[in-house]
Every structure is written in C-alpha cells, then in structure tokens.
Length: 98
Image 1 (cartoon, helix red, strand yellow):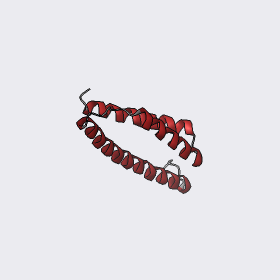
Image 2 (cartoon, helix red, strand yellow; image 1 turned 45 degrees about the horizontal axis):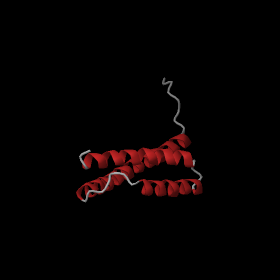
Image 3 (tube, rainbow, N blue to C red; image 1 turned 30 degrees about the horizontal axis):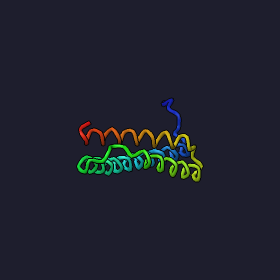
Image 4 (cartoon, one colour; image 1 turned 90 degrees about the vertical axis):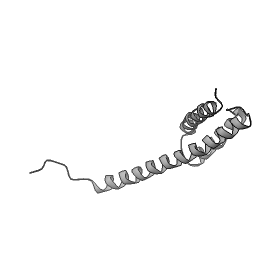
C-alpha cells in the first residue's frame, strides 16, 4: 500500500502553466541576450560606450509604467530590469575589451 498523496489536479494544472511560462521567459531572455550581444559588438566596432544612461533611464520608466498597467510591482520590475541591464553592460564592456 502506497502512502503517497493523490496528486491535486488543480495544483498540477497551475504548476504546468508556471513551468510553461518559465520556459518562455528563458527563451525570451536568451533571444534578448543574443540581440544585445550583437549591439555590444556593434558598439565596440564603432567605438560607442558600453552603457547608455539615458536609454537605461527611458527603458526603466517605460517598463515601470508597463508593470503598473499590468498590476505588477514596479519596484520588482525595475530591479529585474536593472539586473538585466547590468549584465548587458558587462557583456558590452567585454566586447569593447575593457
């Protein structure tokens, strides 16, 4: 006789949706980093700086508003975007040989 609990089908459905969303997020991040890698290579080629503070500020404001419109905590969205931006800048600095 097994003591394993019977799987909850409602919870399993939620978890399957979460797993699908997580997979989509990873694929989207991978595509975003492929594009930003090309941007970093281009910036290095034409000797543009790795970071663009004005663009970053505009993006953060735009995505904070999108977060608010989507009922997502704008502080969380800004932290998440800042993490991505910092990683992109690190890649751009590496492409520039810095």
